[in-house]
Amino acid sequence: MDQVKIGKFIADCRKKQNLTQLQLAERLNITDRAVSKWENGRSMPDISLIPELCGILHVTINDLFSGEVIDMDHYNEQLEKNLLDVAKMKEEADRRLLRLEWVMCISAIICMLGMCMVAAYLPMKDWLRVVLIIVGFVPFLLVLPYAIKIEQTAGYYVCAKCGHRYVPTFHSVLWSMHAGRTRYMKCPHCHQKSWQKKVLTKD
Image 1 (cartoon, rainbow, N blue to C red):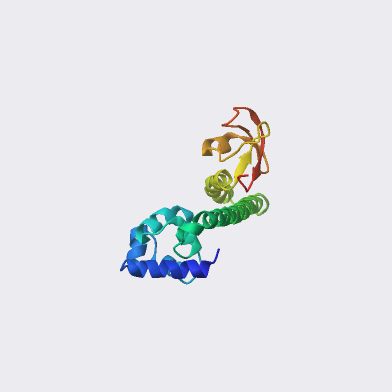
Image 2: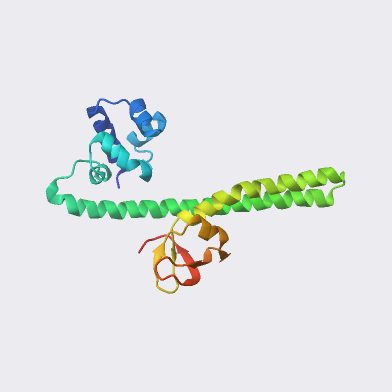
């Protein structure tokens, strides 16, 4: 997927619709800086914005990912290529999110343990020890819901019984037993409980 070509295509289509970068950004509820990055080939639109962006620019999603209006004779061929590219983009984005989850959790745990060790070993008043311990737990408690959300939405879980790959609910991930990225959950397809592994691809 050629980001520079796509960026130029977005810019050309925007100008054809007589829109400035700011006007397009306002219609998408983003900043004009984000639009500028797209058009300069430095980043791609978020997947959630693409249907609305295509509607504003009067192009198909296939056209957008191709960086040009596709001839109907080659439409299906280009569509298949673009779908593969989008799947790769999602896989890479999920991989980055899962790495971020580890960084967030490890940082929060280090902060919590550091504060607890300071409170335990340095001489200070009791009330100050309590404050330090509470302060140490705050980052962990703040990070936890974000980490669980990443765990839920990034990639898929594979049912050990039927092989079905799916994105579980936040509630399922929150309350399931787990060992690393493997969780004991009920499959929505076969309705059996099993230890289900995290994977990045749908197939």
